[in-house]
Figure 1: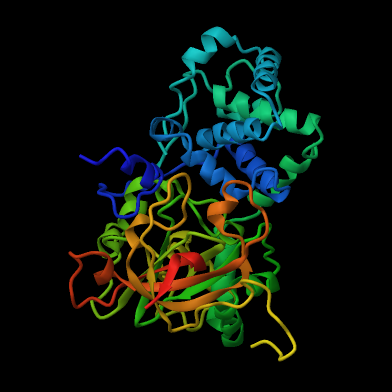
Figure 2: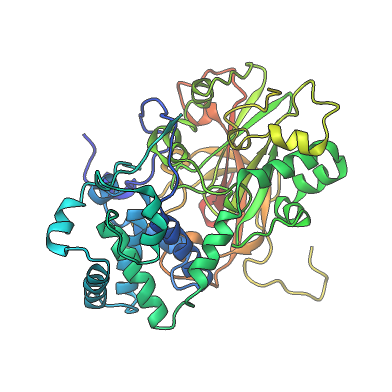
Length: 125
Length: 219
Length: 106
């Protein structure tokens, strides 16, 4: 049973040397939003609004539960949100209002949608 | 190899992706929470003047233009041009740039030559570093725990899972990316390809051979 | 090697040379690190010096985009050094970039 501090000294994203099973040769074509998210990361790094290392640190800071449950690009966009809030570039309310606006524009019913689509992503990557 | 399809909901029509991406509501496609978060962040940053309206679209085009075919071109050129190969091994990024393969970020590239004495493979145990400017985006398995955990502890067992057996007298050398340098494996040129032209050679070179988990084969 | 009248800036010259024997420091940062746990305290050899000197990526993760530049070194470690269960006779190795402040000369 590891000591509590080991939860800090080994980041939940660090896998080198851990026990693991066979390699499943999975791959998937990126969804458009994932590709946009990747492009956003590159643009943010180019401008040094969020550099690539900040992104990595932001993903690590999500903690084990979110890292385990969110997919690869879901982790990125949440990390970007957190970092933008920390830097005072955006406020949580800015994002919440914009999301309502986007949902309305796309005809998404936010109340039932938030629950129904929560577990839609099948890749635990 | 498994190719997973994402089923957002049972009515999803993959053809709606582009329209959904353009923000036009469609009958079937329902964007998920995280997609709407991504759209919101992107729109806010453009509205605030922090990024240009066309920058993300442009970067998508940049990314779409990066595929393993670029790496294969580099490998094939190195196989037939020994002076190019010397320059490639001395400075991977500069040699790629000679072939018109620009690097859109600050990463460097070290090309790792497989020989009769050394077999190279690449991994990122901390995250998912990968030579994207010259290979495109990595496959999911490269980013998942089993590969990232075991490539550094038991590379031969990992290679065997890909069907690759390296003789004991050949050194297996694993490169774990941690900083600005990225890696590309220069696989051994397969026997029987001596008379192949550059394009024919490039057609043999797969992404997985440039990660180092499989050799390049003739068929 | 600097010309006689030139004074190099702090960190401008690499401290280590190719072939130097080094050990990865034993420290356990929290927050953000780029030196995997499995190489800490392990011995290796410098096989390449990455040029130019660059920002410490462990600080870069907190928004530091410049300053305090030093070199990263590609070091080679034997698998037998890293893993007790690896066959003794093996020449297999691992190469990894490490920031200068994490390396000690041995």
